[in-house]
Image 1: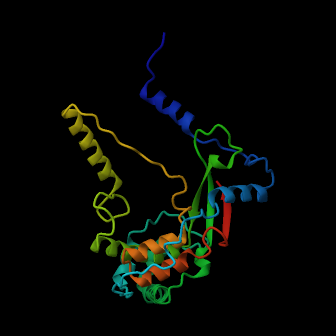
Image 2 (image 1 turned 45 degrees about the horizontal axis):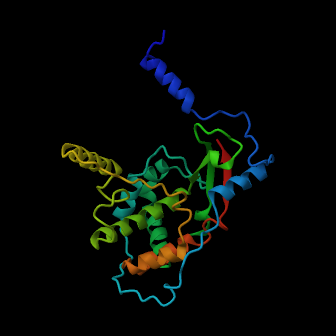
Image 3 (image 1 turned 90 degrees about the vertical axis):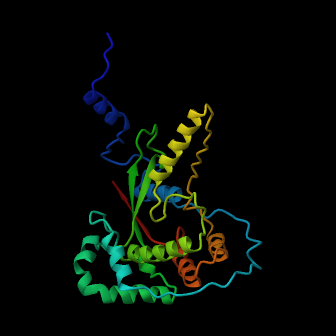
Length: 269
């Protein structure tokens, strides 16, 4: 006689079915057996060459003038450090977030000089572009000899993430001040989280049901949305939207060597 599984048994079965396998060794990847070859196969999957894009409209583009104020403050740096998680794994520089937090009273002037100089001369130091990529198994995949059965986690240098956080805050301020994205956009915005978008979606669905109507939603999953961004098109778009020139120039340097010539150390986990 069939019996409904208990909650404890159901959790045990669910963990077994969704837990990725634990290998004593990494199997062949796309018929490649050497570690160097497997790393190459995974790198080609995770860091594909940039996709072609139509750029004829960019050549003669005229951009509107925008105010330019590249000065940052000590409070911005402290705020960026405070919101970091102390449990995050460091990158190649092996500087933990907790180290920045505990030494800020001593190093804040040096950090300020570093970040302000990076913004002023629009230069993102080349060593900061070096990342450590950790390879993890995706759960419930039929064939773990294929590169797409794995996912990557990039561990950046801690100081590089700090500079990126400052630039992101400056860009976020400009975005909200000049309303550069639709009001319905959620995620990556202050006081706008994905959970709120889901709550609004549920409310709209419930309202449609109450009115005996059908609610239709379309969900799109774009594969490699970030890794396939065309750099020239991206810079053109942010110039058109009146993003300050110092952010545009810094972003242009930040993108140079990304995905093609930057050094990536691959580790198995």
